[in-house]
Length: 63
Image (cartoon, rainbow, N blue to C red; front, side, top):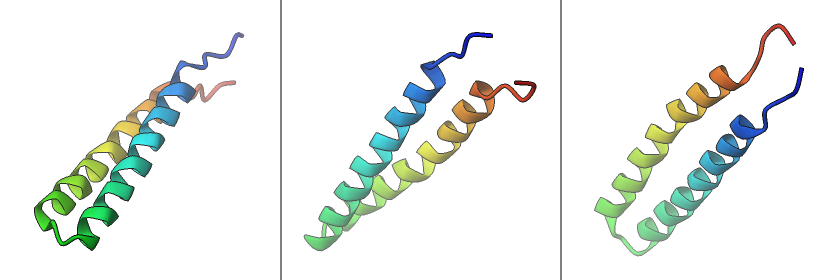
């Protein structure tokens, strides 16, 4: 069976977004912009279930 690389690419994109928002969160915390810090943290928390959903649907258990 041919493997699909679309879930891998989507997981890489979500990981890159996690890294970007984590860096943004640390930067905003350093400059005491606490509302932006909380918003970036919430986005990071929202991205985790999205990554789990992509992983669960992209992995074939019977391979």
